[in-house]
Structures are given as C-alpha cells and as structure tokens.
Amino acid sequence: MEDASLHRLLKARYGAAPDVPEDGFERLAGMAGRGSCRRFRPDPVPAGWIDCLAAVALASPTKSDLQQRDIVVLHSPDQRARLAQFVGGQDWVADAPMLAVFCGNNRRQRLLHDWHGSAFANDHIDAVINATADAAIAMGAFITAAEAMGMGCCPISAVRNEAAAVSDLLDLPDHVFPFAGLAFGFPADPPPVSMRLPLGVTCHVDKYAEADLRDDVARYDTARAAAQPYDQQRDVARFGEATPYTWSEDKVRQYSQPERAGFGAFLRDKGFRLD
Ligand SMILES: Cc1cc2nc3c(=O)[nH]c(=O)nc-3n(C[C@H](O)[C@H](O)[C@H](O)COP(=O)(O)O)c2cc1C
Image (cartoon, rainbow, N blue to C red):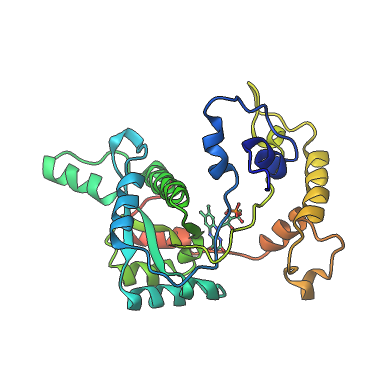
C-alpha cells in the first residue's frame, strides 16, 4: 500500500520534509496531500452538506469580528451555467456539480455607520484588503472542510475577469465584490499533488531572506519539471517551445499577458476609494 504518511506527503511536495512530530500530526496528512479538483463525478452535493460547509467556513477568523465576507451558493443550474460563461477558457467549470462565489463585503459595515449616525472613517485601500482577506480565509476554510469530507474543490479567480457581469448576475450591491468562485463536488479521480517551492524560500526565520533565491528556484524548476511536467506550454507562438518547460517559465509566460487591468475601475464603480 502506498505510504500516505504526513512525512512522505510533505517530502513529495517540498523536496525535503520538516520533522513531523509523532503525536496527532498524522491527522494533517489529508491537508498535506490535497490538490485542486477540476474533474467531478456527476453526483450532486447534498444541500445540507453545503449549509454545513458554509457554517464551518464562516466560523473561521474574521478581521476585528467585522464579518466582511459572504458566500453566494449557486443552487440554480441556470445561475451556474451563466457564471460558467464568464470564466472564459475554463470549460470544466460548466461541468462542476456545484459553484459558489466568495465575496468581500464592506457594505454591512457602512450600513452600521449609517444606522448609528457616525461616518465610516476608513474609506481607503484597507477597506478592500480587510474584506478580501475575510473572503479568502472563509474560502480556504470551506476548501479544507470540503476536502476533509472527501470532496474536491477548485477556486476560480476568473470570476474577476468579467467582474461587472458577475456582479450583475449575483445582484451584488455597492461595496460587495466577487473575490473568487469555488467549484466543488465529488472528485472523479484523486487530484494530483502539486509541488511547492522549498520551505526555505517561503518560510523565513526571524527575518525575510532571499540570499539563494535564484538557485533555489532553479533547483525547484528542475525537480518539478521532472516530477510534474506541464501538459501544455503557454503561448508557444510568442515564446517558442522551451525544454525543459519549467514552473518559472510558465509563470512568466502567464504574467506577460495583461490580466484584469480593469478590476480597480470595477472596485471604484462599487464605491471603493483605492488610495
Ligand atoms: C484565489 C485563487 C484563485 C484561483 N483561480 C483559479 C482559476 O480561475 N482556475 C483554475 O483552474 N484554478 C484556479 N486556482 C487554483 C490554483 O491554480 C491552484 O491552487 C494551484 O495551481 C496549485 O495547485 P493545487 O491547488 O492543486 O496545489 C485558484 C486558486 C486560488 C487560491
């Protein structure tokens, strides 16, 4: 039987594993061995499970207890089909058994100020960051909970590609914005485990450091290209075929294309000041 120990899973993901304390930590193996799921069995997700997952997700920490995140669960197949149309190039989304959209919500806080007759005095970029963090934390908790129940999930930031259209579809009022969609259901097959940068690159001791960053990334590129090669290279017409085709090459190609340049304007239309 394959060794599903926490140590093996972390070694596969990071190249080297930290020491794993013996008692109790094995229960983290599910989190260490997770992956995003984009192929689902057609079985529906029971509605009671979704309510339970939402309740658990919204129990996660929230900045200053402000509770500035909402989840819009798309039970209606029509709504799901419409949302899928706005995430261009990701055909798998239309086949997901369930979709939800995690939103940042700074509206309720502003309404509280109206009702209490005291002006909201924090009308700047922090209002967006706090609500975004709240939405992201809730989505992470939802994913962890769903995966612990044997489900598969994949976030969809592409809901921000056409943020205004998604906002109209969901009737989002001012100061409420889509952070990410989430596809979830029962996985058709176990999702692949994707390697991460070595812990020494992304987890620092006492101070931020990047002394060996370029070499560390080169080693990660080599190890990852061998263990987890990409199925497809991006934009071969512009960049040509690369051998090996590495993680850093893929990320550079991805972000050599402008993406969501209009999102700031969308947030301003929603009433946010981004100073
Ligand atoms: C905020 C956020 C948005 C994402 N948006 C998309 C998306 O639009 N489409 C997609 O296929 N995956 C999306 N993902 C999933 C990432 O591509 C995935 O987490 C990453 O490739 C690492 O793979 P893993 O989750 O299997 O470890 C998103 C993940 C996050 C956290």
